[in-house]
Length: 581
Image (cartoon, rainbow, N blue to C red; front, side, top):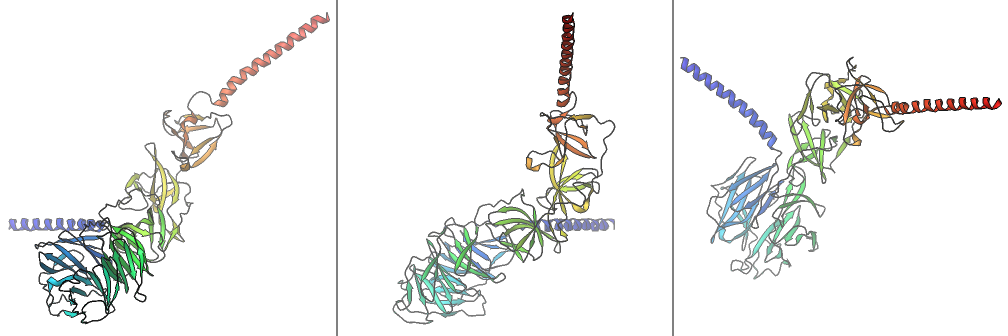
């Protein structure tokens, strides 16, 4: 019986341990969402996209950049390499080759993994004649054989259907070099031998393709975005105007003969994205709007370093929903800062702000980047403090943090005692009656001036000090006669950090706060119930001040001069008296 009770006790303890491990693991996962996605492409890497996610190949692996995560699957089958890739919202389709044999493999994916669909076997498709695959904006898959296009269903109960059937001798090799294709509004746009063909007949029986519109070029890839045809060659991205059959240049940046282009519509945010494989094997992202490509960001294998020292620390308010990104280069969406929410801008990089956002309702804290052009409003700091310029902690061991929030990157600087003197610098920001609730303060710890942040609810007005009777009295001195000596709230290194407390005349007597150290740059003194700081060079711990030294030198000289004058007068009178006789 005792053994059973002991066994139950052990099981209970293990269960509690696992619960705690689960809690802490969950917290770690929540923090891990801020990790950037790093992608690594090779010369033969393929690229595809759907929504605001993109997939690519590298070697014999398929990768998916989704929700700030990089998922991967290594293909175990024996094959030479991938020939083409396409994706929709649930599946990735890959065309592969091994010798003279071709394969069409399907992979399903979700937020956590990519898995191969082992039961998928395409029917009614001559795989060895397939030259390219494609997925349209609705997520429908198509495969182009050398003389027809098949729609592809991943459902084994749904048959594949063929259309755009031709009898042009493609199988015999006349137009075998089919690079890529798209279908838009029942028109087939395909690149054959580097030229663009616009085929607007579903079924035809011509000896060649000369009856269809053709644009000669060295095109290597094609895509469609919002009904607009986009072409790619080694030199740039181009727009094909369907109404005039003209071609215009969109961009000539960062492309080469290994380039790829694909487009995707993000229905959640109503954005048309264009992805290109760049000349450094990175993924450049553009927004396609109004016939223009606007550079959006880049994914590559470079490690992006987030700032660790924050130089802005200002309060902002979102005027509308603001998108939070993983980094200025790796523009994966991390979430939304809702309209009318407040957040702290911490640092600046190019056209982006690195920010801290706390979602109190969700109990979630996020760090990320927002565009400077987003609908945001600065809430300026309110300079005055209701407690005055000098503060003290309201409670024993009140925490002072490096930045005005509690979380990653804002370590605790000090557990301040209740009688510690703090100097008010400013508050973080205020919007009407709303305040972020933090003051920036300065204080001296071990002789060094430190700046940090304390919550406004944890401070009160500073209680004035009185110099103890044993305090040593010193006098202020200056190197120039008549020059006033400045007392400061805090020691400082740069003049812009100077906070003046008072200007006192030379010879003013003050009390030392601590033992006088003539080697120190600053000396702490009592002044009007508070600690103030004066440059040690202006403290005369003993001896005479410059005024006293002047008096010491001047008074004897004056006395001697008067004595000499009196002596001369007396001698002159005596001589005059002798002369009268």
